[in-house]
Length: 413
Image (tube, rainbow, N blue to C red; front, side, top):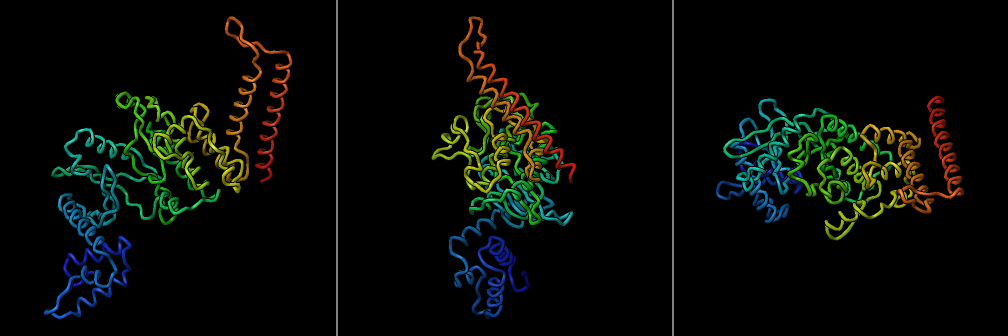
C-alpha cells in the first residue's frame, strides 16, 4: 500500500483503517490514487480524503491518531520489535500487534499502562504472568516469548494468534452444536491438564481468554490471575478475596479459599461449555455480587432442559464439572476428557453417572434416617434398611449393565 508519493503517516493510516475494518483496501486504494492525481497546488491528506468520502468519521480518525501516537511511543522504546497496530486494551494492559525483526514474525506485545508503573505490586503481577506463561509449552496455550523493561516501559511478548475469541462468537448469539463444542473444549481440557501438571491454576477460564485461530485450533490466553498451588504466601495474601470473572467463577474462589486447585478451572470450563451449548451464562443477575451468590446457592438448570437438542450425556458432564461442592466434581482434567470423549462417541459418561449414583444413595440414606441416638448415630427402620438394600442392588446392576454395554460397543468396533 506504501509508495513514494505517500508520507509514512499516510501509509500507517491507510493500513490501520483496513486493520480496524473501518473501510476496505479498495476504498483506501481509490483515495490514494486520488491523492496522487492532485496537483502540487491542491494537496490533500489521505485522512481528509477518507473523511470527505465518508469512509470514516471524525471520531474514528481521532481514535486512529491516538493509536498511531501510542504505537510510535512504544515502538521507539522496545528494541527489536516494530509495532504494527493496537489489538486491544483492558484495565491492566494494552496489547499491540508487532513484528519481531530478528525472526521476521508477527507477535503480540502486552504493555503495562504508565499509570501502573509506579505501583510495585502491579509490576510484580505483570512479570509473574510472563514467568508463569513461560513455564508452559503446549500447542493450545499462547506461548510466551519475552518479558522485560526498557525506559520505564514494561512489556511482555507472546505468540500472536490470528483469529477470534470464543467471546466474539458468543456475543453474536452463536450456540454451538454438541459435537463442535466438545471438540473445542477438549483442546482446553488438554491445555489446562498441562498447566495443572506443572502446579499452575489458571483461575480465569472464560470465553474472552479463549482464542480460536483460522484452523480452529484453540489457544488459552491470559495468565494474569494464574497461581502456583505451592505459592503459600500469595494464597495467604489473597485469602478471603474473590479473584475471577463472576459469570464463570468457582464457588471456592468466591469464598476466597487459600487451597484453590485445578477443580476451580474445571468449574469455570464447565460454565464456559454451558454458555457455548445453551447460548447463555449459567447464572444471571443485574449485579456481579448477585451472580456470585447464585454460583454459591442456586441450583443449576440442566443444559438439556434449556437446549433440548443436547444429549443427556453432555448435560451430566457439565453438571458434574459445575458441582458446587468441589469434592463432587471430576478430580482432574483426565477424568473430564474421558467422559467428554465418551459422549462424543455416543456412549454414556460413566464417571458422571457413577457420581450421580453415589449422590442418589447419600440422599436416600438421608431420607431414611428416622431418629438420632444419644451417641450421635442414625437409627433406621427395618423397612428403610430393606429399601436401601434394594436400591443398592438396582443401582449396582444398572452400573454393571452400562459398563457391559460400553465393553460390547468397543469390541464390536
